Figure (cartoon, rainbow, N blue to C red):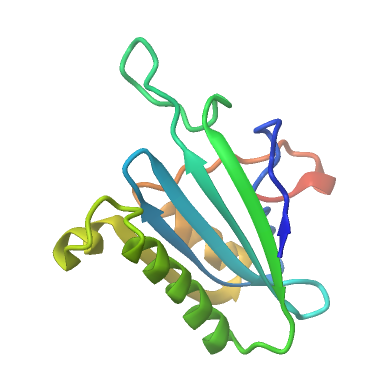
Length: 155
């Protein structure tokens, strides 16, 4: 794994184009932070995992939080999983979330509370299918890139 800590807060964690193949996404809410992971196949067919920890900045004066204002601190990582099946990759990410919960990331280990803080979205489909599924989730914040065909995607 390599640390790709994103200091400028502008670069996307995962770019989702209409083509490509996406296994799924995982989310975990913590006390003042959250975790997100995306598993997809790269152009060579190797499973990739992009994940990030986001530590929330205090709310603005109006009490609101803007996930795109660059005030949150994000640590972004990536890992290649050559030779792994999709099922193995799903287990790996599920175990990452299990470990975070067991270490107290959510502030609780009570199963009925954790169930509300943890989400797994398995798509196993195109980028277009993946985007449609993501946009249905009420807690996902998405920013689209401009209409330049060289920058197609969602992040």
